[in-house]
Image (tube, rainbow, N blue to C red; front, side, top):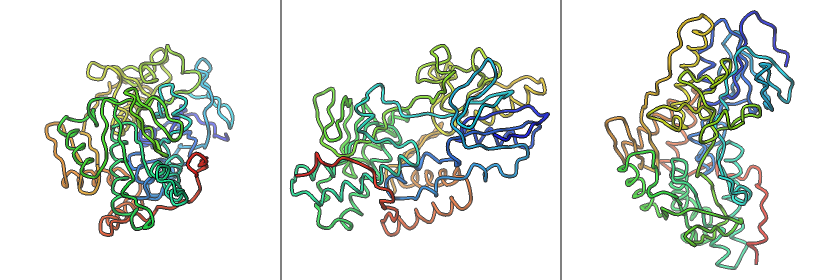
Length: 430
């Protein structure tokens, strides 16, 4: 890896997401050698991935080079690598670019899609956790409409224009709202020779309400917003299979759709060597104490989505969202320095700053600690918060200009098939 030898303790961070970047910044200019490993050379602002999928933003608007984030920090090193195994007894990482030892190791690997063992849905459905996956979904959406032009069979054409979104959390709700706006304002212009009014957007939630982590008022209002946009919301419905065209449910309800987006769950992204049941809690998250220290190993820590810190308020760990990850990263940075200086460690206490979701143009819901509100004001708050947390002045300006343009023109310029998504369309042909 060509990492210089140093008299400073070596802290390796695996993952350049919200938690990993937050931790690295906290350790900046301290007397430690920091090595950050990630399979991508950029940080992704995941809350806006759905806008890449629906043509509202280009991927470089929500991605930022990791090296540029931390370029001014001495004793910081970044390597593009896949971590294959952790040998905790040797304090060693095995990667695709070689093995390396550490003094302290921090897992900030985030989460990955949880299909709950359903291999058929995993094979035929689409997910939206990374930029490449979002680009695949964007291509598939556009390709389906191109294919719909090629068939005279009305039944098959409808299936190609139908969307099935499984999971009523923020990702599913925001994607459904964005697709509904595309159907209303963009598809009729792009495809005047198609009756795009027949396109259906179905949001399926296994529970009795969408946005279940938010207040009941926010859930009800978000559902009202979606229905105003023409989205069909199906609650208490669980998808059991999907073959690429037909989805079935436990209630024997079926849906014909060429696009199924799975947004129904995530799990911790663990690494071989720390993936045994003894290290895990529910959700495939690593068991950590109140200092984010792995139970049973004083030299390994976990922060963010992969960290399972069980408390009275959060018996299954903290919410798998950006704010807990950022706060844990900052707190652990201070604690690692305290550890090296033999000072007492500070337990992590999550400060809930609220939650929010946008449903579409002038439509959003916001829950704060003692106050919740919906509508256009909530939408402006949602935009401001997301712009604030984007990394880089250029990214903020590009996203802001895109939003203003899209709002005024009711358009989405990035509806491009840059790289076709390989799909077998034989089942949709005459």
